[in-house]
Image 1: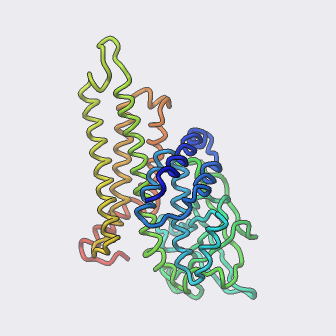
Image 2: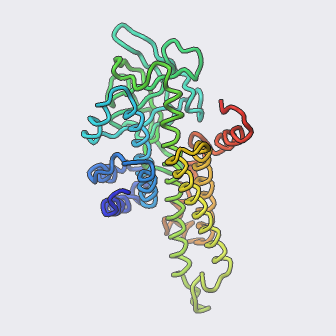
Image 3: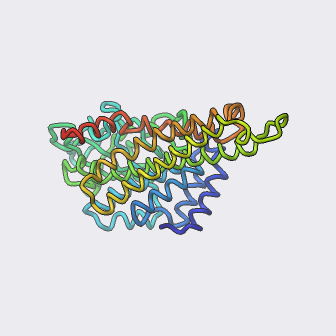
Length: 362
């Protein structure tokens, strides 16, 4: 597991800036620097990654998502033929991210409609990306595009593109319902790269996205949703046990049975998400034959439970939450991102349904 003291210290930094990050859409520069400076930039394994990401999400979901995308990108870079690349980027404390989803294929991130081509000096990338976390902020982008000469959207290749490369542009600003500080803006990649920028073999992007990126993203996203739900639950308990009905001489929790019922439902939903994630991590670690089924379900279970928990928290805390006096309202908004973030909950349900019916996913 990670250094608990280091994670605790970083979480305090994240908490300090979380309100401003959310209210102003400010990029959490201090928080991201604190993560890198604490030596938490690259986790030792997937379980450590899940625990650290969950803790970060309790404090600041925008920062947790930036960290999640960085780790996913670093896993692809580490698996590339250039074995020195990830070490060099890590030593630079450089921020990386994924640039997968495109306007033409929307939440089907594994199917880029763009196509790379050869030019006189190397490779030309021409891709419109719809949502790129850390857009305009990352030092390096892992970019998915259709492979040279590919015949279908499944024929893709991943490239590493350095931020600031001519032809790499951020299009507009991110103004989302939640995750307001993660700069998830559209980007245009119309740039030239050389052969050394290729992170997979030609046409190997689809395989890397499904075998490397998808498991790490799913586990990390589940951890983020659990962290949000845990924070909302903690806020709900604090409010219910401290807010008083003075004319009745007791707290909301003591005097209102419905309040206790909401707390119970919230606790059970959080426990369910934690247990499912733990079970999935164990399956991955033991290479269980149904591990991928758990990977697909982990994000769906945790994201839908986070929506339920934060909805319960809003109702439980009433006007104090609706009026923005508590962080519950922020958790409520942030929790909604995962269900519409590729792969969406509906796509995951379809994948799981296909898998248990013995049908191919694609």
